[in-house]
Length: 509
Image (cartoon, rainbow, N blue to C red; front, side, top):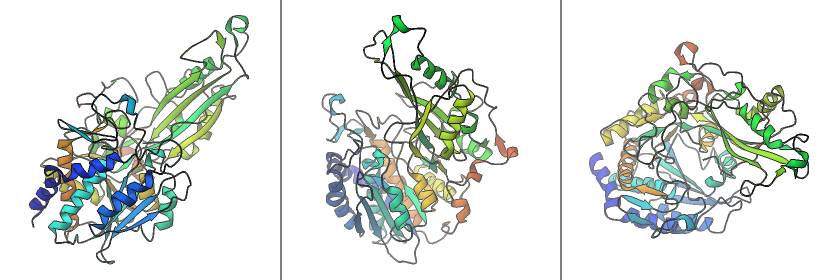
Protein backbone atom coordinates (compact mmCIF):
# COMPACT_ATOMS: atom_id res chain seq x y z
CA UNK A 1 0.00 0.00 0.00
CA UNK A 2 1.20 3.53 -0.73
CA UNK A 3 1.50 6.44 1.68
CA UNK A 4 -1.50 8.10 0.03
CA UNK A 5 -3.63 4.99 0.37
CA UNK A 6 -2.60 4.64 4.03
CA UNK A 7 -3.67 8.21 4.76
CA UNK A 8 -7.01 7.52 3.08
CA UNK A 9 -7.41 4.44 5.25
CA UNK A 10 -6.82 6.52 8.38
CA UNK A 11 -9.42 9.05 7.26
CA UNK A 12 -11.94 6.22 6.90
CA UNK A 13 -11.98 5.89 10.70
CA UNK A 14 -13.74 9.25 10.74
CA UNK A 15 -15.99 8.70 7.75
CA UNK A 16 -17.30 5.29 8.81
CA UNK A 17 -18.06 6.44 12.37
CA UNK A 18 -15.49 4.15 14.00
CA UNK A 19 -13.56 6.97 15.67
CA UNK A 20 -16.76 8.64 16.90
CA UNK A 21 -17.93 5.42 18.54
CA UNK A 22 -14.57 4.88 20.21
CA UNK A 23 -14.54 8.41 21.55
CA UNK A 24 -18.19 8.16 22.59
CA UNK A 25 -17.33 5.29 24.96
CA UNK A 26 -14.27 7.08 26.28
CA UNK A 27 -16.00 10.40 26.93
CA UNK A 28 -18.80 8.55 28.77
CA UNK A 29 -16.28 7.37 31.37
CA UNK A 30 -16.16 9.99 34.13
CA UNK A 31 -12.45 10.33 34.73
CA UNK A 32 -12.29 13.65 36.61
CA UNK A 33 -8.99 13.84 38.48
CA UNK A 34 -8.83 17.44 39.72
CA UNK A 35 -10.68 17.02 43.02
CA UNK A 36 -7.59 16.25 45.09
CA UNK A 37 -7.83 12.44 45.26
CA UNK A 38 -7.85 9.74 42.60
CA UNK A 39 -11.42 8.45 42.17
CA UNK A 40 -12.15 4.79 41.48
CA UNK A 41 -13.37 5.74 37.99
CA UNK A 42 -9.82 6.33 36.71
CA UNK A 43 -8.55 2.74 36.53
CA UNK A 44 -11.42 1.37 34.35
CA UNK A 45 -10.47 3.77 31.56
CA UNK A 46 -7.20 1.90 31.24
CA UNK A 47 -8.29 -1.66 32.08
CA UNK A 48 -11.64 -1.74 30.28
CA UNK A 49 -11.11 0.65 27.38
CA UNK A 50 -7.50 1.24 26.43
CA UNK A 51 -5.94 -2.15 27.16
CA UNK A 52 -8.33 -4.07 24.84
CA UNK A 53 -7.96 -1.46 22.08
CA UNK A 54 -4.16 -1.56 22.19
CA UNK A 55 -3.88 -5.33 22.55
CA UNK A 56 -5.88 -5.62 19.34
CA UNK A 57 -3.03 -3.71 17.65
CA UNK A 58 -0.35 -6.02 19.02
CA UNK A 59 0.68 -4.09 22.12
CA UNK A 60 1.70 -5.74 25.36
CA UNK A 61 0.06 -3.76 28.14
CA UNK A 62 1.21 -3.15 31.69
CA UNK A 63 -0.88 -1.14 34.17
CA UNK A 64 1.31 0.35 36.87
CA UNK A 65 0.04 1.57 40.24
CA UNK A 66 0.82 5.16 41.06
CA UNK A 67 3.68 5.52 43.56
CA UNK A 68 1.74 8.45 45.03
CA UNK A 69 -1.48 7.39 46.81
CA UNK A 70 -3.47 10.38 45.52
CA UNK A 71 -2.67 9.63 41.88
CA UNK A 72 -4.30 7.42 39.26
CA UNK A 73 -2.62 4.45 37.54
CA UNK A 74 -0.43 4.43 34.45
CA UNK A 75 -0.55 2.28 31.33
CA UNK A 76 2.59 1.38 29.43
CA UNK A 77 1.75 -0.34 26.14
CA UNK A 78 4.66 -1.70 24.11
CA UNK A 79 4.75 -3.06 20.58
CA UNK A 80 8.23 -4.48 20.04
CA UNK A 81 8.91 -5.75 16.52
CA UNK A 82 12.65 -6.15 17.02
CA UNK A 83 14.79 -5.12 19.97
CA UNK A 84 17.37 -3.79 17.50
CA UNK A 85 14.89 -1.31 15.97
CA UNK A 86 14.43 2.25 17.27
CA UNK A 87 11.43 3.02 19.47
CA UNK A 88 8.90 5.87 19.30
CA UNK A 89 7.26 6.85 22.59
CA UNK A 90 3.77 8.32 22.56
CA UNK A 91 1.83 9.85 25.43
CA UNK A 92 -1.67 10.83 26.41
CA UNK A 93 -3.85 11.28 29.46
CA UNK A 94 -7.28 9.81 30.06
CA UNK A 95 -8.21 12.01 33.01
CA UNK A 96 -10.23 15.20 32.61
CA UNK A 97 -11.16 18.25 34.64
CA UNK A 98 -14.51 18.64 36.36
CA UNK A 99 -17.46 18.24 34.03
CA UNK A 100 -19.22 21.45 35.24
CA UNK A 101 -22.49 19.81 34.17
CA UNK A 102 -24.84 22.62 35.21
CA UNK A 103 -23.09 25.11 32.94
CA UNK A 104 -23.53 23.21 29.67
CA UNK A 105 -26.33 24.48 27.45
CA UNK A 106 -29.51 22.53 26.76
CA UNK A 107 -28.92 19.43 24.67
CA UNK A 108 -25.27 19.07 25.68
CA UNK A 109 -23.68 17.23 28.60
CA UNK A 110 -20.02 16.75 29.48
CA UNK A 111 -20.07 12.94 29.50
CA UNK A 112 -22.23 12.30 26.44
CA UNK A 113 -20.45 12.86 23.13
CA UNK A 114 -22.64 14.95 20.82
CA UNK A 115 -22.09 15.84 17.17
CA UNK A 116 -23.45 19.29 16.33
CA UNK A 117 -22.50 20.61 12.91
CA UNK A 118 -18.73 20.31 12.56
CA UNK A 119 -18.15 20.01 16.32
CA UNK A 120 -17.95 17.03 18.68
CA UNK A 121 -18.89 18.16 22.19
CA UNK A 122 -17.87 16.41 25.40
CA UNK A 123 -15.42 16.60 28.26
CA UNK A 124 -12.05 15.29 27.15
CA UNK A 125 -12.72 15.60 23.43
CA UNK A 126 -9.92 18.14 23.10
CA UNK A 127 -8.02 17.39 26.29
CA UNK A 128 -6.97 14.65 25.81
CA UNK A 129 -9.14 11.63 24.99
CA UNK A 130 -9.88 12.86 21.49
CA UNK A 131 -6.25 13.58 20.70
CA UNK A 132 -4.82 10.23 21.75
CA UNK A 133 -7.78 8.47 20.11
CA UNK A 134 -6.87 10.15 16.81
CA UNK A 135 -3.28 8.97 17.16
CA UNK A 136 -4.26 5.38 17.96
CA UNK A 137 -6.62 5.28 14.96
CA UNK A 138 -3.88 6.63 12.69
CA UNK A 139 -1.36 4.13 14.03
CA UNK A 140 -3.85 1.30 13.43
CA UNK A 141 -4.18 2.39 9.81
CA UNK A 142 -0.40 2.33 9.31
CA UNK A 143 -0.06 -1.09 10.95
CA UNK A 144 -2.69 -2.41 8.57
CA UNK A 145 -1.22 -0.66 5.54
CA UNK A 146 2.27 -2.06 6.18
CA UNK A 147 1.03 -5.63 6.61
CA UNK A 148 1.27 -5.70 10.38
CA UNK A 149 4.78 -4.26 10.71
CA UNK A 150 5.64 -0.62 11.36
CA UNK A 151 9.39 -0.98 10.83
CA UNK A 152 10.05 0.40 14.33
CA UNK A 153 8.91 -0.24 17.88
CA UNK A 154 6.12 1.76 19.49
CA UNK A 155 5.43 2.50 23.15
CA UNK A 156 2.46 4.43 24.51
CA UNK A 157 2.37 5.92 28.01
CA UNK A 158 -1.06 6.91 29.31
CA UNK A 159 -1.50 8.61 32.64
CA UNK A 160 -4.64 9.37 34.63
CA UNK A 161 -3.51 12.44 36.58
CA UNK A 162 -2.33 15.15 34.19
CA UNK A 163 -5.12 17.50 35.29
CA UNK A 164 -3.92 17.08 38.88
CA UNK A 165 -0.29 18.00 38.02
CA UNK A 166 0.73 14.43 37.05
CA UNK A 167 1.38 12.92 40.49
CA UNK A 168 3.84 10.04 40.29
CA UNK A 169 4.78 10.59 36.65
CA UNK A 170 8.33 11.70 37.42
CA UNK A 171 8.92 8.64 39.59
CA UNK A 172 7.57 6.31 36.91
CA UNK A 173 9.78 7.93 34.26
CA UNK A 174 12.84 7.67 36.48
CA UNK A 175 12.09 4.06 37.47
CA UNK A 176 11.39 2.76 33.94
CA UNK A 177 13.69 5.02 31.90
CA UNK A 178 15.97 2.17 30.86
CA UNK A 179 13.31 -0.55 30.59
CA UNK A 180 9.63 -0.03 29.75
CA UNK A 181 10.06 3.59 28.67
CA UNK A 182 13.35 3.29 26.81
CA UNK A 183 12.92 5.06 23.47
CA UNK A 184 14.63 7.12 20.78
CA UNK A 185 11.96 9.69 19.88
CA UNK A 186 8.92 11.21 21.60
CA UNK A 187 5.87 11.97 19.41
CA UNK A 188 2.52 12.87 20.96
CA UNK A 189 -0.47 15.21 20.79
CA UNK A 190 -1.90 17.63 23.33
CA UNK A 191 -2.64 21.33 23.53
CA UNK A 192 -3.95 23.53 20.71
CA UNK A 193 -2.78 24.46 17.25
CA UNK A 194 -2.01 28.13 16.70
CA UNK A 195 -5.30 28.32 14.78
CA UNK A 196 -8.01 26.01 13.52
CA UNK A 197 -6.68 25.92 9.95
CA UNK A 198 -2.93 25.85 10.64
CA UNK A 199 -1.18 22.53 11.30
CA UNK A 200 1.23 23.00 14.17
CA UNK A 201 4.39 21.36 15.48
CA UNK A 202 5.68 22.38 18.88
CA UNK A 203 8.90 21.26 20.50
CA UNK A 204 8.44 21.74 24.24
CA UNK A 205 6.50 23.90 26.64
CA UNK A 206 6.88 26.92 28.85
CA UNK A 207 7.32 26.12 32.49
CA UNK A 208 5.15 27.47 35.27
CA UNK A 209 5.57 28.27 38.94
CA UNK A 210 2.52 29.09 41.02
CA UNK A 211 3.27 31.09 44.14
CA UNK A 212 1.33 32.92 46.81
CA UNK A 213 1.95 36.21 48.57
CA UNK A 214 0.31 36.45 51.96
CA UNK A 215 0.21 39.19 54.58
CA UNK A 216 -1.53 38.63 57.92
CA UNK A 217 -1.68 41.78 60.04
CA UNK A 218 -3.95 40.58 62.85
CA UNK A 219 -6.37 37.85 63.85
CA UNK A 220 -9.64 39.63 62.98
CA UNK A 221 -11.10 42.62 61.21
CA UNK A 222 -11.73 45.99 62.87
CA UNK A 223 -14.34 48.67 62.14
CA UNK A 224 -13.03 50.96 59.39
CA UNK A 225 -14.53 54.05 61.00
CA UNK A 226 -13.23 53.43 64.49
CA UNK A 227 -9.80 52.21 63.44
CA UNK A 228 -9.17 53.36 59.86
CA UNK A 229 -6.01 55.44 59.62
CA UNK A 230 -4.25 53.86 62.59
CA UNK A 231 -4.23 50.18 61.59
CA UNK A 232 -2.31 48.70 58.66
CA UNK A 233 -4.63 47.57 55.89
CA UNK A 234 -3.06 44.40 54.44
CA UNK A 235 -5.13 44.70 51.25
CA UNK A 236 -3.58 48.10 50.51
CA UNK A 237 -0.09 46.78 51.22
CA UNK A 238 -0.74 43.75 49.02
CA UNK A 239 -1.86 45.92 46.11
CA UNK A 240 1.39 47.90 46.25
CA UNK A 241 3.47 44.73 46.63
CA UNK A 242 1.92 43.05 43.60
CA UNK A 243 2.45 46.24 41.59
CA UNK A 244 6.22 45.84 41.96
CA UNK A 245 6.20 42.47 40.19
CA UNK A 246 4.81 43.75 36.88
CA UNK A 247 3.99 47.23 35.64
CA UNK A 248 0.54 48.43 34.58
CA UNK A 249 1.13 47.07 31.07
CA UNK A 250 1.99 43.58 32.30
CA UNK A 251 5.73 43.89 31.81
CA UNK A 252 7.68 41.67 34.21
CA UNK A 253 9.78 43.90 36.48
CA UNK A 254 11.53 41.33 38.69
CA UNK A 255 14.98 41.42 37.10
CA UNK A 256 15.99 37.93 38.24
CA UNK A 257 12.95 36.34 36.57
CA UNK A 258 13.33 37.91 33.12
CA UNK A 259 14.36 35.44 30.40
CA UNK A 260 17.42 35.36 28.14
CA UNK A 261 17.21 37.31 24.85
CA UNK A 262 15.05 35.83 22.09
CA UNK A 263 17.39 34.01 19.71
CA UNK A 264 17.40 34.66 15.99
CA UNK A 265 16.37 31.05 15.30
CA UNK A 266 13.34 31.29 17.58
CA UNK A 267 12.39 34.65 16.12
CA UNK A 268 12.64 33.17 12.63
CA UNK A 269 10.19 30.31 13.23
CA UNK A 270 7.73 32.56 15.05
CA UNK A 271 7.75 35.25 12.36
CA UNK A 272 4.64 33.92 10.58
CA UNK A 273 2.79 32.53 13.62
CA UNK A 274 -0.58 34.24 14.12
CA UNK A 275 -2.11 34.85 17.54
CA UNK A 276 -5.82 35.34 18.19
CA UNK A 277 -7.15 35.13 14.64
CA UNK A 278 -9.89 32.50 15.03
CA UNK A 279 -13.53 33.44 15.48
CA UNK A 280 -14.28 33.82 19.17
CA UNK A 281 -10.69 34.55 20.18
CA UNK A 282 -10.25 37.54 22.49
CA UNK A 283 -8.84 40.76 21.08
CA UNK A 284 -5.09 41.04 21.52
CA UNK A 285 -3.97 43.97 23.69
CA UNK A 286 -1.30 45.59 21.52
CA UNK A 287 0.33 47.48 24.39
CA UNK A 288 0.28 44.62 26.92
CA UNK A 289 3.42 42.71 27.83
CA UNK A 290 7.05 43.13 26.87
CA UNK A 291 7.58 45.95 24.35
CA UNK A 292 9.57 45.27 21.21
CA UNK A 293 8.24 41.72 20.78
CA UNK A 294 5.55 40.34 18.50
CA UNK A 295 2.48 38.70 20.08
CA UNK A 296 3.87 35.26 19.21
CA UNK A 297 7.22 36.11 20.83
CA UNK A 298 5.49 37.40 23.95
CA UNK A 299 3.49 34.15 24.21
CA UNK A 300 6.14 31.60 23.36
CA UNK A 301 9.55 33.19 23.77
CA UNK A 302 9.19 35.36 26.88
CA UNK A 303 8.22 35.17 30.54
CA UNK A 304 4.97 36.51 31.91
CA UNK A 305 3.77 37.06 35.45
CA UNK A 306 0.03 36.72 35.99
CA UNK A 307 -2.05 37.51 39.06
CA UNK A 308 -4.53 34.64 39.19
CA UNK A 309 -6.58 35.90 42.12
CA UNK A 310 -6.55 38.47 44.92
CA UNK A 311 -8.28 38.06 48.25
CA UNK A 312 -9.11 40.31 51.22
CA UNK A 313 -12.33 40.70 53.17
CA UNK A 314 -15.50 39.39 51.51
CA UNK A 315 -15.79 40.63 47.88
CA UNK A 316 -19.29 39.17 47.55
CA UNK A 317 -20.55 41.07 50.60
CA UNK A 318 -18.12 43.77 51.73
CA UNK A 319 -18.50 45.19 55.21
CA UNK A 320 -17.09 48.30 56.88
CA UNK A 321 -14.08 46.59 58.35
CA UNK A 322 -10.33 46.60 57.80
CA UNK A 323 -9.51 43.03 56.71
CA UNK A 324 -7.07 41.09 58.88
CA UNK A 325 -5.12 39.59 55.99
CA UNK A 326 -4.66 39.64 52.22
CA UNK A 327 -3.48 37.07 49.71
CA UNK A 328 -2.40 37.12 46.05
CA UNK A 329 -2.08 33.93 44.01
CA UNK A 330 0.41 34.51 41.21
CA UNK A 331 2.01 32.54 38.41
CA UNK A 332 5.19 32.85 36.38
CA UNK A 333 5.09 31.28 32.91
CA UNK A 334 8.67 31.02 31.70
CA UNK A 335 10.95 29.78 28.93
CA UNK A 336 14.18 27.78 29.05
CA UNK A 337 17.02 29.66 30.70
CA UNK A 338 15.01 31.10 33.62
CA UNK A 339 16.26 30.27 37.16
CA UNK A 340 12.79 29.10 38.19
CA UNK A 341 14.05 26.83 40.96
CA UNK A 342 15.21 29.98 42.76
CA UNK A 343 11.93 31.87 42.36
CA UNK A 344 11.10 32.00 46.08
CA UNK A 345 14.51 33.47 46.94
CA UNK A 346 14.39 35.91 44.00
CA UNK A 347 10.93 37.18 44.89
CA UNK A 348 11.87 37.32 48.58
CA UNK A 349 14.87 39.53 47.82
CA UNK A 350 12.80 41.69 45.46
CA UNK A 351 10.14 42.28 48.12
CA UNK A 352 12.73 43.07 50.78
CA UNK A 353 14.40 45.63 48.52
CA UNK A 354 11.03 47.30 47.88
CA UNK A 355 10.06 47.48 51.52
CA UNK A 356 7.88 44.42 52.08
CA UNK A 357 9.86 42.23 54.50
CA UNK A 358 6.65 41.15 56.28
CA UNK A 359 5.19 39.49 53.19
CA UNK A 360 5.23 35.69 53.06
CA UNK A 361 6.30 33.90 49.87
CA UNK A 362 5.46 30.26 49.19
CA UNK A 363 5.65 28.03 46.12
CA UNK A 364 2.61 25.83 45.56
CA UNK A 365 3.28 24.18 42.20
CA UNK A 366 6.16 24.16 39.75
CA UNK A 367 7.22 22.58 36.47
CA UNK A 368 10.21 23.25 34.25
CA UNK A 369 10.44 24.62 30.70
CA UNK A 370 11.69 22.64 27.71
CA UNK A 371 12.56 23.44 24.13
CA UNK A 372 14.04 21.22 21.44
CA UNK A 373 16.41 23.17 19.20
CA UNK A 374 14.34 24.45 16.28
CA UNK A 375 17.17 23.40 13.94
CA UNK A 376 17.30 19.82 15.28
CA UNK A 377 17.09 17.24 12.44
CA UNK A 378 13.85 15.73 13.80
CA UNK A 379 12.14 19.12 13.51
CA UNK A 380 12.92 19.41 9.82
CA UNK A 381 11.88 15.80 9.23
CA UNK A 382 8.51 16.27 10.96
CA UNK A 383 7.82 19.58 9.21
CA UNK A 384 8.49 18.01 5.81
CA UNK A 385 6.22 15.07 6.59
CA UNK A 386 3.36 17.34 7.69
CA UNK A 387 3.76 19.54 4.62
CA UNK A 388 3.75 16.48 2.34
CA UNK A 389 0.43 15.44 3.89
CA UNK A 390 -1.32 18.82 4.11
CA UNK A 391 0.18 20.66 1.18
CA UNK A 392 1.24 23.54 3.40
CA UNK A 393 3.97 23.93 6.03
CA UNK A 394 3.10 23.71 9.71
CA UNK A 395 3.60 26.48 12.19
CA UNK A 396 6.68 25.56 14.22
CA UNK A 397 6.64 26.66 17.85
CA UNK A 398 9.82 26.37 19.91
CA UNK A 399 7.51 25.61 22.81
CA UNK A 400 3.85 25.69 23.70
CA UNK A 401 2.79 28.84 25.54
CA UNK A 402 1.10 26.66 28.14
CA UNK A 403 2.64 23.87 30.18
CA UNK A 404 2.90 20.09 29.85
CA UNK A 405 4.98 17.46 31.66
CA UNK A 406 7.42 17.61 28.75
CA UNK A 407 10.44 18.08 31.03
CA UNK A 408 10.03 14.44 32.09
CA UNK A 409 10.24 13.20 28.50
CA UNK A 410 12.99 15.60 27.47
CA UNK A 411 15.14 15.70 30.60
CA UNK A 412 14.43 12.48 32.51
CA UNK A 413 14.01 10.20 29.48
CA UNK A 414 16.44 12.25 27.37
CA UNK A 415 14.32 12.29 24.21
CA UNK A 416 13.85 14.79 21.38
CA UNK A 417 10.19 15.81 21.77
CA UNK A 418 7.71 16.50 18.97
CA UNK A 419 4.09 17.51 19.67
CA UNK A 420 1.42 17.65 16.95
CA UNK A 421 -1.82 19.05 18.46
CA UNK A 422 -5.30 18.26 17.13
CA UNK A 423 -7.20 20.98 18.99
CA UNK A 424 -7.44 24.75 18.54
CA UNK A 425 -7.46 27.78 20.87
CA UNK A 426 -11.28 28.11 20.89
CA UNK A 427 -11.96 24.48 21.91
CA UNK A 428 -13.27 25.46 25.40
CA UNK A 429 -10.72 23.22 27.07
CA UNK A 430 -11.38 23.06 30.85
CA UNK A 431 -14.68 24.95 30.32
CA UNK A 432 -18.28 24.08 29.47
CA UNK A 433 -18.85 23.10 25.82
CA UNK A 434 -15.41 21.58 25.26
CA UNK A 435 -15.24 20.28 21.69
CA UNK A 436 -13.22 19.04 18.74
CA UNK A 437 -13.56 20.45 15.25
CA UNK A 438 -14.28 17.69 12.72
CA UNK A 439 -12.06 19.26 10.00
CA UNK A 440 -9.16 19.26 12.48
CA UNK A 441 -9.92 15.64 13.42
CA UNK A 442 -9.75 14.70 9.74
CA UNK A 443 -6.48 16.50 9.19
CA UNK A 444 -5.09 15.13 12.45
CA UNK A 445 -5.72 11.56 11.29
CA UNK A 446 -4.01 12.34 8.00
CA UNK A 447 -1.00 14.06 9.59
CA UNK A 448 -0.40 11.30 12.13
CA UNK A 449 -0.80 8.54 9.54
CA UNK A 450 1.79 10.35 7.40
CA UNK A 451 4.20 10.70 10.31
CA UNK A 452 3.80 7.09 11.45
CA UNK A 453 4.22 5.91 7.85
CA UNK A 454 7.33 8.01 7.29
CA UNK A 455 8.92 6.70 10.48
CA UNK A 456 8.89 3.26 8.85
CA UNK A 457 11.12 4.35 5.98
CA UNK A 458 14.50 2.70 6.24
CA UNK A 459 16.54 5.69 5.07
CA UNK A 460 16.81 9.38 5.87
CA UNK A 461 15.66 9.35 9.49
CA UNK A 462 17.75 11.10 12.16
CA UNK A 463 17.56 8.29 14.72
CA UNK A 464 21.15 8.90 15.75
CA UNK A 465 21.11 12.70 15.86
CA UNK A 466 23.50 14.18 18.40
CA UNK A 467 22.05 13.54 21.85
CA UNK A 468 23.33 16.88 23.07
CA UNK A 469 21.29 18.77 20.49
CA UNK A 470 18.30 16.57 21.32
CA UNK A 471 18.23 17.78 24.90
CA UNK A 472 14.97 19.66 25.07
CA UNK A 473 15.96 21.73 28.03
CA UNK A 474 19.49 22.69 27.07
CA UNK A 475 19.87 26.21 28.32
CA UNK A 476 22.34 26.95 25.53
CA UNK A 477 19.53 26.73 23.00
CA UNK A 478 17.67 29.47 24.83
CA UNK A 479 20.62 31.77 25.43
CA UNK A 480 22.08 32.20 21.96
CA UNK A 481 24.96 34.60 21.43
CA UNK A 482 24.19 38.28 21.64
CA UNK A 483 25.06 38.78 18.00
CA UNK A 484 22.29 36.37 16.99
CA UNK A 485 19.72 37.59 19.47
CA UNK A 486 16.94 40.07 19.86
CA UNK A 487 17.04 41.55 23.34
CA UNK A 488 14.17 43.35 25.01
CA UNK A 489 15.08 46.54 26.88
CA UNK A 490 16.05 46.22 30.52
CA UNK A 491 13.23 46.25 33.02
CA UNK A 492 12.37 49.67 34.41
CA UNK A 493 12.57 50.26 38.14
CA UNK A 494 9.10 49.55 39.53
CA UNK A 495 7.29 52.29 41.35
CA UNK A 496 5.66 50.20 44.05
CA UNK A 497 6.59 47.59 46.61
CA UNK A 498 5.78 43.87 46.62
CA UNK A 499 5.88 40.66 48.71
CA UNK A 500 5.55 36.99 47.80
CA UNK A 501 4.41 33.50 48.80
CA UNK A 502 2.60 30.60 47.15
CA UNK A 503 -0.60 28.51 47.01
CA UNK A 504 -2.31 28.16 43.67
CA UNK A 505 -4.14 26.09 41.13
CA UNK A 506 -3.86 22.29 41.09
CA UNK A 507 -2.65 22.07 37.48
CA UNK A 508 -0.12 23.89 35.32
CA UNK A 509 -1.69 23.00 31.98
